[in-house]
Length: 514
Image (cartoon, rainbow, N blue to C red; front, side, top):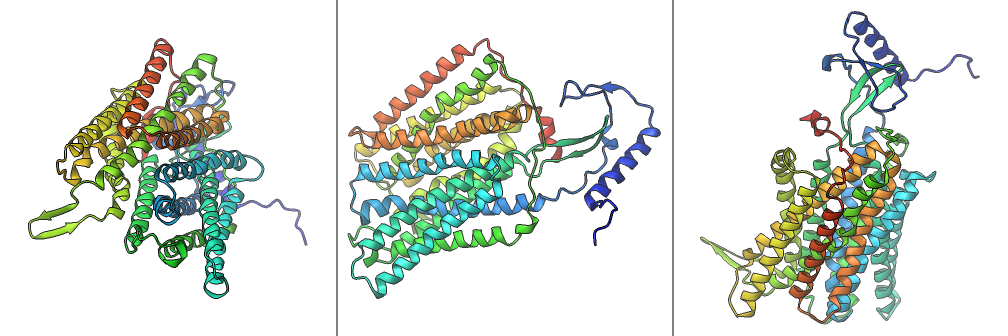
């Protein structure tokens, strides 16, 4: 039987409790200096509070939801990176495609994931909801690997041809890209809503201050650790098999074993997502900025996306170029009494492992110092300069190899550090300081900016795949792309020379946890 008394939830009771404590604090205080609200120009004056006047905020019921999603995102990145590492040798050695076509399909596969992230970001902000979109992506990934296992079973027991199994394997690989793209966009949008401090306004007063649920550097480290683990895992499994034997896919268990192992990861992510289903809450953004940008601010905000695709094209071209160089280098090393050989299958995992050290170093040491003296355009110029240094290093090594000199494998480290540093600097400025900080002031720009970010990566992958089909030395293509990117940045700098950029959020709010 229903009761006529209004139900008061524990969360509501907690807010009322802090409101009463706040009134007691303010009755004993004499500081009533007015301060206009920065959230709404029409708001009434707020009372200025000292740091000790901010009372602790009640625990948000969706904190556990974000923790679950962070781990799910990491698991999906492990699976996707592992498949991406395996894809080129699978296409080149097992399906006997030519080199250019294998590189083109690998880049198109990567581009497909980021393109689907655009649509999942839009769907997550609609009535569909982020959790429903994420669950759909996990279900698609599970279906892909279930189909692979069933096809393998049919081949071993009923089928005499491996053609059907090969087709199912290719379909499974494509569905993994679809699954990763669906999950990537929704989780990025979800975390963008909860990465800032927040002050709860009740009436005319600020009752409590919320800290960020996660720091962007933690998310950056997590998203670099996962691809490193996925690439290393696939490379180690791939190293157990002779990829150049010329055997057909299902006559050798290498691809199937790797696909099945990674498919187990997708199933675990789905299970981990479904277990706390009842604890998920619909999350409202920590901010509700309504700042309207004029035409000049919009141009200065969107113009970096004009030359970012060229950078991503250079980045992926550099990646494939130094992997090819490393296969021609001396990979046998002797340190004292320790003799070891770096297997060729582990070369592609070198960049993700380097990012594990580069990202924390920049986040905790370099950026706190540089952000006091370097502006928005300065960070972009530094990122482009690092890309130039990486191209020069790659050209020197290629020149030495062409002259027949023996080059040690560790000589590729400077170009890997430079290109990874360029990736971090441009990602920090465009994604962290623009896409996230500006969105806090103008919430309605969240979807367009995230879509622009993913679009630049997708277009860069497509350009890289097209460039791989051109029968020209790689260093010439990279140099041309670098010159085009520098020209684009110069045009951007000239057009925005006297154009003020949209003010960014003060970093002191970001550093409240430190």
